Length: 394
Image 1 (cartoon, one colour):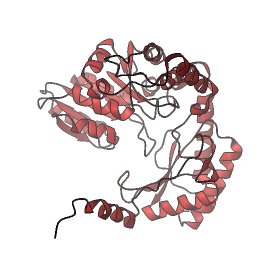
Image 2 (cartoon, rainbow, N blue to C red):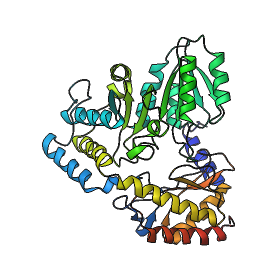
Image 3 (cartoon, rainbow, N blue to C red):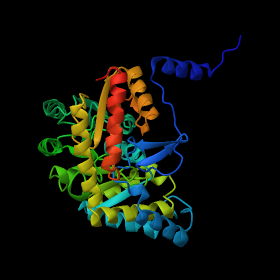
Image 4 (cartoon, rainbow, N blue to C red):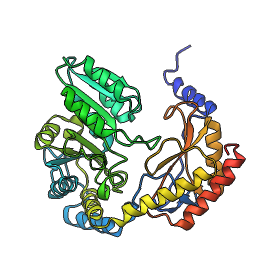
């Protein structure tokens, strides 16, 4: 009997289903708005990364149309060859100004940024990359692409980080990589302490600020500004795909960093550049952040209100410091039950289960949005109270 070489596909998926670890994809039918349409039902959106509701901002929509009319539907090439358009350079100039850094570079996605840059900064067996144990999968994959030795320190444990740094002072290069905001728990890395340790031991500092861009710091300038170390960070990495409301990865730092990155990162060199519509919307998003602080202010007002109310109900929200609010459920099937209860009552909030979090740390990850009204928040909170009781969580 011949072996079926793809039998494992169904077998492994069925195992995920039996354990409650599988993703069930729903269809978003229309824009990602605070009240949206999912699988034919009107719901309150509580699981989008569109923190500032900018994906629906008229300035971004108008800019996408304008730059399509100006420069066409696509760029025609990778940027290093013939796809380096005027709008791409305008975005990077405005971004560097907003971030108060010498220069910036825009990648196709945030994942492509980490996968393309991390292994080039420390590529050799003579190098060392040190990573927080809860870093994002894109960081983990970026580290795996390097031949460097790897060190992992306990989550946000500065004693643990210093111990790894002390033991590896003889390495050719040392790179310390951390998330700025940890996407599953909503807590932040103590970036001021990390940067100080990097400077003490001669290591490079690299922060993935995907969930901090547009959220932390004055006007959403990021975690570097939030901790007062924006001028000391070697690499600020982020994304346009969340608070900026568009798509794309980014880095900000010195001119030397940018020149190195676009000559060394294969994900940047070998991927087509963003269509003019995307780049135009990126430019508009940066300008909105600079000129319309009310979006950032509304986000934090909604965060404070929702977190306070849901904690009063008896839900455990972990150690969040940001608009990411994990509603802890424990077991995966319980998180899925709560998500279904919420869906039935008109709230779109998905379960996060293993392997994205530990097996006994399943949760509903709520992400607040600047466009949510108090009426919508109260409606969602009422659904959480009813669903939490039915699921036996509170």
